[in-house]
Amino acid sequence: MSSAERDTKRTPVGWQERSIVMQLAFGQMSTHVLGVAVRLEVFDRVGDGELTAASLADDLGTHPQAMYRLLRALAGLRLLTETAPGTFATTPAGDLLRSGVPGTLLSVARVFTDPSMTRGWELLEQSVRTGRTGFDAAFGTDFFGYLKEHPALSAEFNAAMGQATRVAADVLPAHYDFGRFGTIVDVGGGDGTLLSAVLRAHAGPRGVVYDTAEGLAQAPARLADEGIADRVTLRVGDFFASAPAGGDLYLLKSVIHDWNDEQCVTILRHIRDVIPADGTLLIVEPVLPAVVSGETTELAYLSDLNMLVNVGGRERTADDFAALCSEAGFKLGGITPLPQPNVFQLIEATPA
Image 1 (spheres, one colour):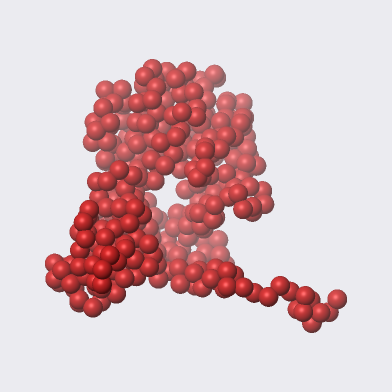
Image 2: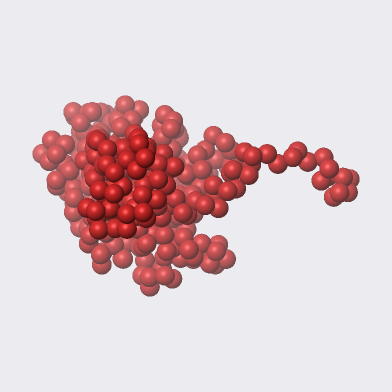
């Protein structure tokens, strides 16, 4: 069949297909609209009530018409609703961009729209051509080194990771038998959000959060707020150098995807050095299918590219996790998905 014949047999392109392409082409604009809105604290200022564009522009000292156009775009993105000409209220999605509300994703929005994060994405083509991290080329240092030099951004990043972790923390304790362990070591556990949820649901175990000083900076306040500070020990360290002994369950959530294979094996080997023969390793990460399918959210693949451009890691398939575990001295056991729409899966391994 000739190319001309094939062309005549193609299904005519419909509006749905055109809409997909146009939304992708305009996607970066939505990111910038969101970034400006959270930096101006639009959603906090609107709050539970309604606010006019004119009054918000007056409060912020911004151009009145430009502010109205920004708010109108946020309404088009379904984050605000225009209740009367020039008057706006938040939607349920917009409420997630307010500080202090249950389930807030404000820090997530601030971090992922911050120029330090979006700059790496501008160099995606370079990363695809070379396999190297765009962030390092843009800033002359690696992402985590940059955070160490920028304490305010580091604190926001820690908060964002805590907020993102709550998606898994809300369901994980009920889908794994944590109660059979004596001490759970959360390696790279940040502010302790995940371990807090586990210990609140299971009265028996004690916990250890192991991370850098920067990673643990918000942990004391978090653990105190959760009422479990007396059951948790904070250990400052570098998982590229060692892992703390004393646990019978070692937990790694959203750590492995940050690093390349060699670095991951180093982390896992340090855990293998200290884990008891009857201990368990539990990795909590997305698991990509061998072939792209509609069952896997596009966020998993975008996250994979974000690892490429910003930190140098990647999302992995079940075979990838099996290879990492084997090289580090672990035997991969079961892989259990958490309930949808959660993207995380539980990857269990034991010492080989």
